[in-house]
Every structure is written in C-alpha cells, then in structure tokens.
Length: 338
Image (tube, rainbow, N blue to C red; front, top):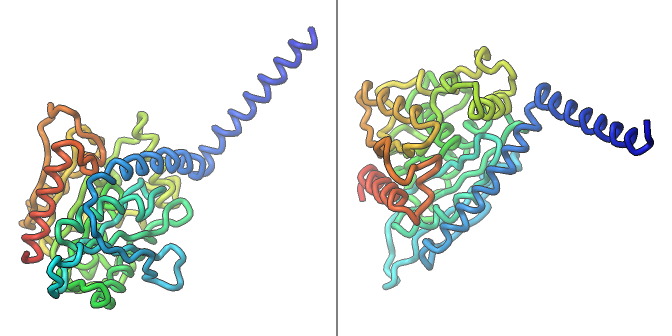
C-alpha cells in the first residue's frame, strides 16, 4: 500500500472516529444538541430584532438591567416606557405587559425582544422584558420560579417607573409562552403553585390577563420522531434534566394544560398556520373555553399565504404581524381598563 493511500485511510479513520464520538456525545448529554440549537436560534433572534428596528418609535424611555434577585446572576429585567407627554403633563400609573422571551428553553435573552417591547411601549403601555436561566445549565422549574420572583419585585418597586402594580398582563412567545402560562396558573391556583414549588409573586387580582404566542402547553404530546421530534427531544431533555423526561413525575407539572381551572386569567392565544406548535395553541384555547375562561384567539386559515411559521408575530413587515400586534394591544387595553 502506498504512503499517500495509507495517509488517506488514516485521515478517513480519524474523521470517522470523530464523527462517532460526536454522535455518542449527542446520546449521552443534552449539551451538544442544545448548543447547536442555541446558535441557530440566537442568529434568528438577532435577525428578527434587526428587522424590527425601523418600527421602533422615537422617545421610548428605558431602564435597563434591573436586578430582581441579588442572589441570582441571571435575574435581570428591562423596563420600557412610552415617551413622556408632549405637553409635560403628569400621567397616572401605566399598565404593564411583562414579556417572557422564547428560545426553546435553551437560548435567548431579554434583549432579543427589546425592539418589540419598544414598539409595544409606543402604544402607551409599560413593558418589562424578563431574563431567566436557560437550559441545560438550569433545569425546570427554575425559569418559572425566576419569573415569579421578577413579578414580585416589579410589584414592590412599581412606583419607581410609574407602573400600576394592579394592572399587569403576563406575555410570552414560544418557550416563554409556556413559562408565562405556568406562572399565570401558579397565581390563579394555589394548589398548583405548591406542586411547582413557588409562592405566587402576585395576587390574582393584579394579573389581568395572559398573552401567549406560539407556545407548547402539553409537553407529552409532541411527536418525538422526525426532524422536529429530534429538536423536541433535545430541548426537553435539556430543560427537564432527564433523558427519559416523559416518565419524570416532577416534570409532569410542566404540562400546564393538565392543571387548568376556571380561575385561569383571561387569555389571548395565537400561532401561525405553519407553526409546528399550532395544535398546542388550538388545544389550549379549547381547554380554556371548556372551562369557561375568557379566551380570544388569532388563528389563520390552513391555506393562508404566505405561510406563517413559528414566531410570525415578530414580523411587522407582514400584514399578519401587524394584525397580531393590533389585536393583542386591543386585548391588553380591554383587560387593564384603558
């Protein structure tokens, strides 16, 4: 055998060994898959944020990097307020939308939704964008507990920003919608709060509604085969901390759809017609309606063109994104009495 051929075979053997080791890494730890997903999602979030910049109105007031738990390095939120009245007149305390970012529980940060929060603030609302610890570095129910703590801090410090602590709407997108739905349910249902391990940071009268875009609410129901199934297995393993997450009794409380009662706050629910999580939003809306919870939905025909994928609402260059913004703001204003 010639020396070049031996070198080629050796190189191919090294490549094969590296590929085998990489494949093995995906089987023994959630970290490789989570890091790949994080890189892809972070890039997409940055592109969406950049596209929103032109829609941000001037004069938005910002208070960035508020620490809501001094013992937690990830416990930060940003506050966005509408421009001050042009005539210099005083204004009363503002209702607030507290937004929990998405990212499949393994990526994202409060900055990803900063421009969307600024757009919302331009509609006359205070907006708070919350950070939480992401997986696999942190596991369920850490983000639920963190967002609950953020709400408690916001309620206690609301006067600093001219916010009305009795007119709060909790919102989220994708994984953030799941976290927001869980936090809302801990506030509405004391027994569920005990199961999750939190002491609610708000009284139920303070939480006026919930806005949920493109979220998962039944974590047992996702199909775990095919490309999307591979994604689900990776993020749910990362978030639960258990490879066999479907059998983990502690993780069962994460399927919030199983723990709802008529006390759940009024909800606005939406997802695009091409979102792989669309059925989850449909099922949640049906379940809440069956319980006689007030529900408003924004869904689209199956043949809607262009097809509206996951997180469609952040694309304000399209009519559907503008419609989602308008209908969401109308829902919030109705709930907070504006």
